[in-house]
Image (spheres, rainbow, N blue to C red):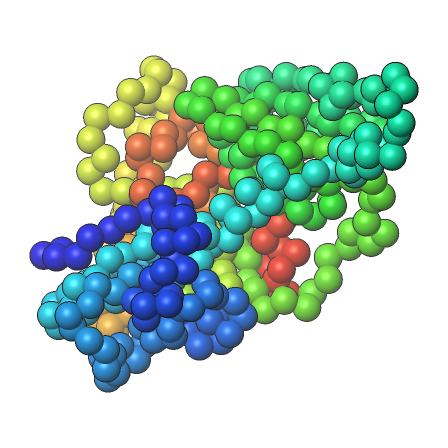
Length: 378
């Protein structure tokens, strides 16, 4: 039974978090190396792995716990709540905290053109001068509604090549994965994501072309990360993917699994309820496994008999089932990404997939590979 409270970390102001830190109430439950790589000012480090043996703090206080994304802090909150502490789980974690800070910086930081205009206004005399062109007059608008990944990113790249440094491109896209993709793409290319808005029907982004493009956009394999593309919808291959992923996470790596086409079946939730679909989408669904428990073997499936034999042997040998491995991946903050283009093609809806899944496209996966030196296609 859950006894603790959960709030979204982005609902708190910097002043709120600072006050928590000053009063010794802000707790980082990530591993020590993650904490040392970056943390919220004032937060104390108490890794989840050691909470069973040490948490020598005052039970009369309320403690606010965060991890990288929210799963480990949820576990820690339950553990401390059961031990008599009053705790609040800060959902979204350090990643959401960083994303919010970057978004605020992008919105408030003046562009080079704005700074030049300000400097010019200060040095000009009272004589009437010609005002510099406004940003709106230097902004091109395009609409890629109905286009699927990676089409929007490819077109954005081509459009920006035609613009001058400092010019902006406003783009409207109906692919929901574009919201994540464009953030990753902008970070990789050195261009500035000035604004990003997402509704149920579309994503609107404003990108400003960099004054000077990065000299080298090649991937530098210096980061300690693992990325996996799960293309297969077969049980044994999905097992291999999640075994490797959990092993890599245990070794301290940041891990993401990009599930596309048949691999999306591994992300399905049990008993999703009634999901509204078209006739073709329902037909597709009838031919696909209803979830990871029903995925077939790649060899010797024998109309499902082989799968049952495999599960029986795994249980006898104390090998985790695929759903258990997926649960562990989520608990360990492994990023699970569903390819939105594949979802549209195969008639798979968001409601059918686990709530922890992120929805994105190839741009997000490519961004993750930039911070990885271990990339697999299964």
